[in-house]
Length: 227
Image (tube, rainbow, N blue to C red; front, side, top):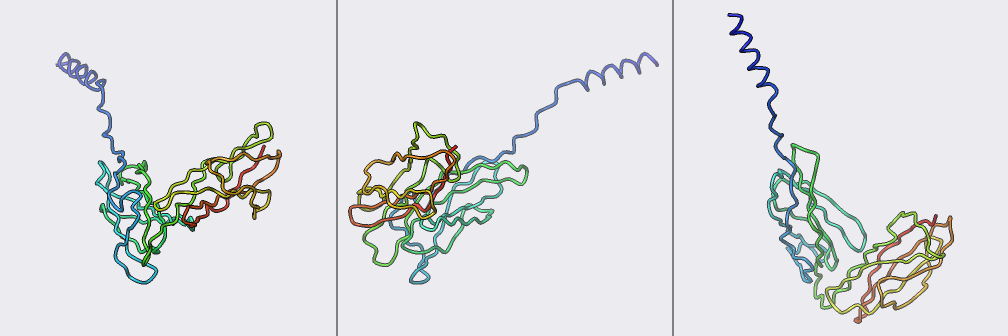
């Protein structure tokens, strides 16, 4: 009897030392956006007033996701709104004659980890719009609030530009050590510009994009400090 009990204990001991299966992966993956189309120049949606229309956003179902966060950003005001949805479609009332960007975050109730889609831009058309202003310049360096080290007393301002309508003619660069920077260079054809700086100083800058049709947009004020 004792021999049988010892054998059973040995078997249970070995069984307890076996490898445990890893927990299932519950991390959601990034979704793929469907509409409005990327860089679509004439999105209209359902017109609800002279200055607003309802736009429908759609995206693909993401593996392991049971919820989504739709983020929409007004590229003129820089205001971003978010809404939680459980389907792959949502609507939003947006200003007409205004450029927007949007992306979707995949979420899961089983984990705090999320996954973000690509970001797409589109232009919500206005009544009788025949010329679309360029997208506001996207600042790439220095980013807002950066603390940078100058190279030989200089910092290179960098940005990207894009348009749906007329070609971009150039960029006006505003730069200074106060929050209302002055124009320092007009009609810059490149997407970077070098400025002289001093250590221990905070600088402010913005980029105005101008197309050949005379339309323009403003990046908004950015600031950075020099070590």
